[in-house]
Image (cartoon, rainbow, N blue to C red; front, side, top):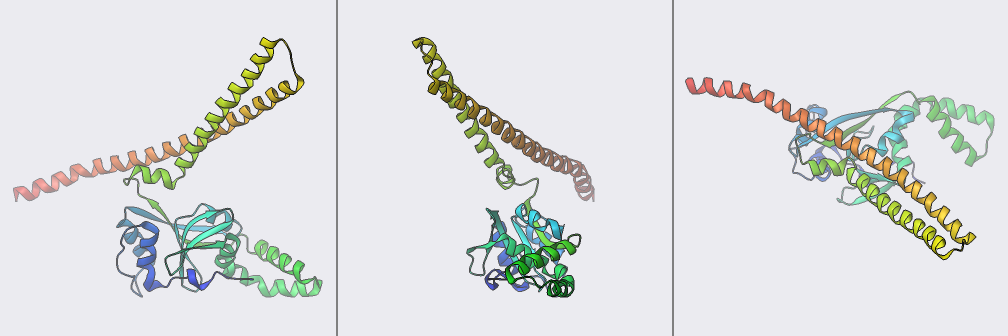
Length: 278
């Protein structure tokens, strides 16, 4: 069983331009120098593709949850290597390997690799405690994992940089990255299902009323269809609310970006006029 992420997904510092290009879809600048600040280089490299890089940190106990919503992201390992996180789905983290292919890795394995330096501080003490308890091997591994996670739960871990489209970039691209398309799909499917179930339920009720005969099985089907319609209505409302909040946030960001450009424009005009007068 693997205890750390495979070497195929580990990128070195000199290979960062290719990795950032794979994550952003746009050509990148040259590799960072040995003394160059990495955060500054990542910000400039993402700026070429109209994206923003936001440093991501989380306590050990929250690293797993943070990774679920981090993609796309440039991750940093303790040995100085890097990884490109494309997506997380159903407990699998899809990373870019050095052959430019998507490699699924268990999310728990990625989480353990990132948290290993923080948890290793308590490894010797935890192993000594378990040796005194004389637990069996399968139980020992589970207990050791739980103890290390609990002891190091509050230690902050630097994960890397989350890559997001800048407010002035394509609105459709931002909507896809924030999951609006999926929320709207759920809303449309729930709306259609609710309409179909409600129509079918009332058709059953009308048929029973017109025939003058009430069948227990048909009435049970009517109750089941109405209950499913209510569940679909709840799903529709939740998806619609989530999509509305996300769209509102994107529009607010874009409005702030536009206002910022408008505020900078008069200054540019003044400078241009001064240059013309000279």
